[in-house]
Length: 291
Ligand SMILES: C[S@@+](CC[C@H](N)C(=O)[O-])C[C@H]1O[C@@H](n2cnc3c(N)ncnc32)[C@H](O)[C@@H]1O
Image: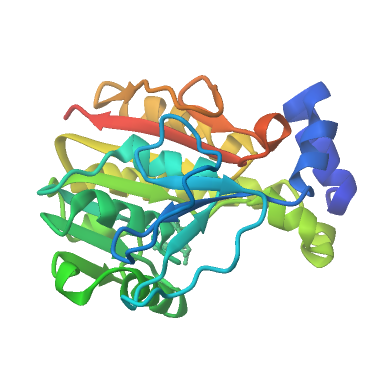
């Protein structure tokens, strides 16, 4: 049996991130800061002073710790707390009113909520997730944040993301694939998970992530875009997925280049790592379907 646990984890990510790894590992265990995204349906306003991240299209404020979100007198939650890096996935997707958009792995629903804000209940927004208990959280977030009358163009579905393409093809304008991933921050936080960690874990995830991406590309129209994102550090689940796409589907897609207020360029996409600004880890890449 191969090496497992912290030693294997250190060896694997040390080789991947070289001299950056020790700082990166320490930053994964540091307390997280948050962005609060204002819920425009709540009537709440942030205090006028407060730090923000220039370049985000959502009204927001940044603090290390926020009071727990609460309902206003209008009956809706005042703000949604996220990692700033996660917001970039929706900025990259840029869903517009009138478009047909799928959030393929949507639960608990933070990014779907942001999509809904941008789409203003015009077009179609599908939030999909295979897990029933996690789908319940999507419904809860939408009901807590958005009036029912403004949810008529929102649907929650339960497809297996790897198989959706067997039932529908060339139908949607945009797909967000925020894929299940290694989530090394959580592994480091959980002694039992860490003791069981082995490189096979990220290799197996990369196989299902590629199947989901292939399915996502099949269900969008020619000219449509897929944003593929993970909160993984492992390159196997990030740029390497796109290398594989070039091998299997070269000529049928092109990468879209975009820069963001935080993070750094990678070979095929964009990555936010917590050793620099405290946000992330988060990786995203934008793929346009050509045929
Ligand atoms: C990284 S989380 C998504 C987080 C979400 N996008 C958000 O911003 O709140 C990945 C999700 O994928 C779902 N999932 C895992 N395998 C799936 C599959 N084969 N098809 C559909 N959903 C799947 C999990 O239940 C989990 O909720």
